[in-house]
Image (tube, rainbow, N blue to C red; front, side, top):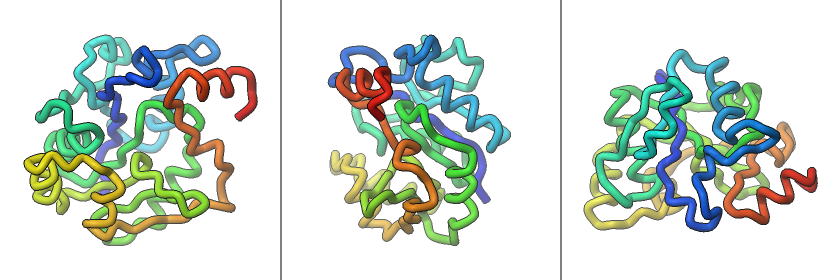
Length: 188
């Protein structure tokens, strides 16, 4: 059973130059768009971050257990916090929809991990992660291997193709100022 939703907001945002989740898009922090959708799908929404500015959203803050381990470290801390299987999303995906989340959940089998795919491209930070993968996460952290795509391959995660059911816009993530400018000027 899937427990809570966790928004991973622990990245350095080095390409953006500022915290991506807190950057304003049409007057609201990017993460607020996600919170609005996730709270309609899950009883608990939590934020994995070290940045205490996120407390203003009145959600539980789950800090990393291991520093500088990227999304793998965030998933690890989130799974440890929950004790159940969890839904994970990056903090820079303002166009997610309840329908896309529901579709992924409905198509999730007993696989240890189920992530979205779009046009055969894996979306590892839009997925369901199982408690079963904790030992593998620990191994990857100990070896300092933080590559998400390798994690999905190693656990033989299930990939649910979301195209053509959903627009590619659902999976747009804002990695840098160029991405942000394209979104602001409605080119995405």
